Image 1: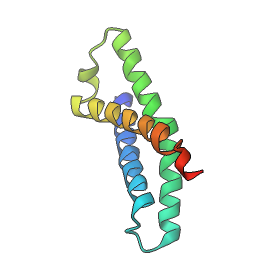
Image 2: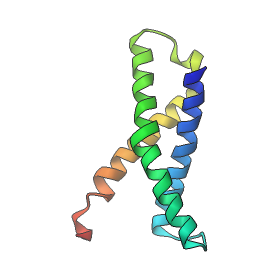
Image 3: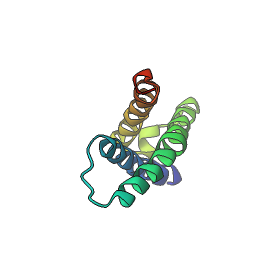
Length: 101
């Protein structure tokens, strides 16, 4: 039950991560302070807190040979995993790009 709740929280933060990435390239929120706060608030929890911890927990549940999909819906597990891959690629490719330095 707790794993399902935190999986949903991670999913919500992943959506905010996508919104923050989109805001870095095109500002569609008129108020700049709201946009900057959204970018700052969504990056840390999504990339460094919820996504990795939830995916590590999924891995631990699978190692314990329990049925993960009985605890959390398949679409939520797959979406959180895909978002973790996207976040890792974003950090490696975009944030470490030497073109901007």
